[in-house]
Length: 584
Ligand code: ATP
Ligand code: MG
Image 1 (tube, rainbow, N blue to C red):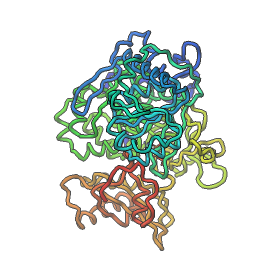
Image 2: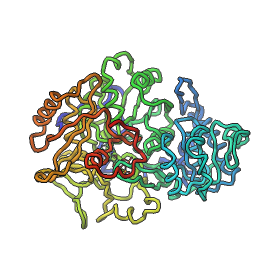
Image 3: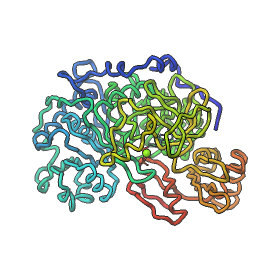
Image 4: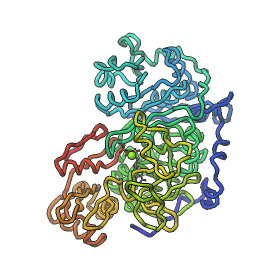
């Protein structure tokens, strides 16, 4: 791992968190609580914090959300627009007799109605559950069954293709709201959202929810197994807001682009809630990744803070630097990444082509918000996830059965654990209380990730607990091997697994996707093997390297190592509901 550091953000902007040590030592969640508006008659509601609370401020008529359609049509929404539209949505739910606490699912692309629906659902005191629009009928159905869905917000096309034949069988379903249907086209139980919204009340007040009331149900990415339903409460907004100030360094004048789809937790926590709470202008792009398009959006929209994911960064790296040079990205002052380990190579590349490094941060669906981060005010250590945010106590603890103990020796592998008590901590795994209880030991929440901590307090990701490779007495984290191979100029992406071996226990096997135009031949395979051996030593370098056109990934962009392994061993593939179609 690289010991070098890269210099922070661009000049001229004072970061929100300057003195890490002091702020960390003095931080108290009560301060963050005091920054919340709270409901007029007491209680707390995420949507009120995100939109309605701004109505009496000067930012009421500021641009809150700029939506760019696949065909480059632009629709703008001010904070007032969002407040009124979400109130209309909440009143639609009321009119349909959907009671507070009901689960409102969304299955839609990144359309304005999805964002308005999310806010309106929360305003009505209901629970918002976003699904990826690309899910097939089975993953949609199982998630709706687990969560006992009451309402589904979707489009005509998705409805017809994926739901029309079975949704009536779900006992709790009360209504399907169709974003783009006319009233005449709707079957019984389906409603034209536009028609109902037109009659809705733009000034309906927010439901009086309490801080500990359920607000969000998110399904995990399914990287390590069957996705879990993770329960969050309104109080999570404290972390959304505070962490976006610290870890994304959002300032009031920022134009912010979070590229995540609300189908996974980042797209909701940091693609809807946090930026609106902080009163910035956010960009939503309906289209999927395309290097040219992304650079154009960054340039034309003058994006100043950009939050994205390693897969996207690797795709941009694959597209090359020439294309980057065609765009003026001088507005960018902070760039961050989450979701997967960010290879040091990608951090260094960011620094080279954007003039600022990517700031990696770590969190999970369960934590509700960013826990560990590289900060704007600090030099970045490429390959490290950064340090715990103020208010977050993180540690490395022992693995295995029995009480977990903190490991204080630097750079020693153990499980990454957090001290419970931060406001956005999940409240349970829905209908899996036992599993929830099992994720705590000796006063720690156990993340399921392996990591190490250095003497400066920075955390280094090693791998998922399930992915750790034990080879001839060595413990090898896949991330280390993947990052070494990523440094080779021919390599676009790598997934590494432990393959059972009668002598070594396991051997390291790497699946490599190459950059466009690179020939996958024996000579290159040998070269990569030598390259890895030089960097990692013979004990850690992969014994086997194979080429793949693509690696299997979740829809949130995570490499599914368990699937590489299952396929390698000819074992059942397990739950692949979140798998993005892949070529083997
Ligand atoms: P499942 O729990 O269903 O297997 P998942 O863990 O991938 O899926 P998420 O909650 O979406 O579901 O992802 C959180 C996980 O993503 C973390 O536990 C970690 O393994 C990985 N992750 C997130 N950010 C980082 C990061 N900066 N570096 C390394 N890994 C990260
Ligand atoms: Mg997980």
